Amino acid sequence: MTEVLSGPETSSPFEGRLVRLRAREPEDEPLLHRWFNDPEVTEYLAIRYPLSHHGEREFIEKTSDVSYQTASFAIETLEGTMIGGCGLENASPENRRSTLGIAIGDKAHWDGGYGTDAMRVLCRVGFEMLNLHRIELEVYDGNERARHVYEKVGFRLEATRRQAVYKHGRYLDVHLMGLLEGELRLD
Amino acid sequence: MSRRTLEGDLVRLRAREESDLEFVYRWINDWETIKYLGQRYPRSRAFERQWLTSGDPAYGNAAFIAETLADARPIGWLGLHGATPENRCADLGIAIGEHDFLGGGYGTDAMRTICRFGFDMMNLNRIQLTVYDWNPRAIRCYEKVGFRHEGVIRDGIFKAGRWNNLVLMGLLRGELQ
Image (tube, rainbow over all chains, first blue to last red; front, side):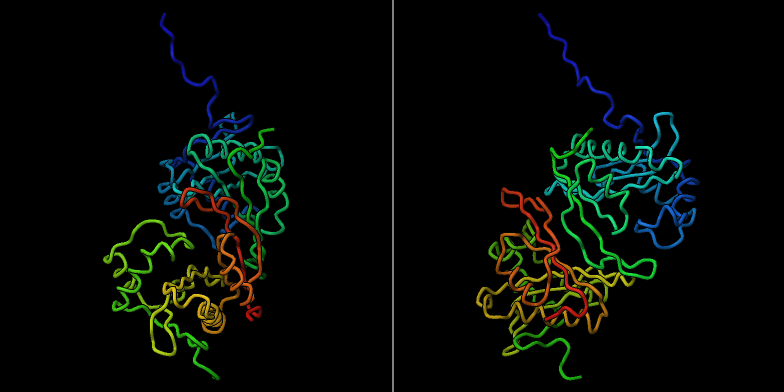
């Protein structure tokens, strides 16, 4: 009797209920340029200076080959509309630890569960495809909406760097959050 | 100015020299020293020579050798790294490589001296560091200098067969004791 071997019966690890992560493409440039020059989008991001089209093109070139070190993605709805970007950067293979960044640039898709879904997909990719042990991120004090999402998917507040960032004329505390293998909450 | 900015009561901080090679080569390959650090691989003389000659202390990478005031003996290395002018925040790293100078106040004096340098000469607003949660001697030293506990990074480093928690500590301008 021969047994037919088959792979896992799961759907794509890059797809959630609302969004899909895909590699970045040169065509993404105009939207990225618009979003990341929008002060409402960048208020709680590390972006400080205006970004040029040239700079965005370079960013896409540098990040469009997805790898362990640069697991960077465009976030699109299941219908195929790009709504933001996210990534796991600077993974350390010995420590199996990586830093997560995410932004929903399309304001029409704020508050609809898209960010939460993208977070879950990205963390699953980190644990199930990159074999990470720990995912961490930083969130600026005052960014309550983001912090709520991170807590919902299982991130724990671990530390607060007092006055670690200066933006908008004042020093801001920066919260460090961490998620270990087995702590991701999918519902 | 009342005192030399790079001198404490027991130690002086100075730029790295190629002539420090045998000291730093021994320290960075000594498990008793590097078990407290993130360092994990053996290092060659060529690597260390390159590091020693890679540039004098500057804003983004202010690295020093600590030597005794008494007889100019190198005892360890330390630095303020990654400072950005907008945030005025730097990461501090320190190690005393000469075991005879552990527990005698040299590390604490070197910490005070480099933090004073960071605030008074580099015009930093914040200095931060991480330390293994099982290293109470270092944590007590940092507390004494004024660093506050800001949290714990769970399983931040895997080394010597186990996951290690890291305590994050921070010192703001005006908090140095």
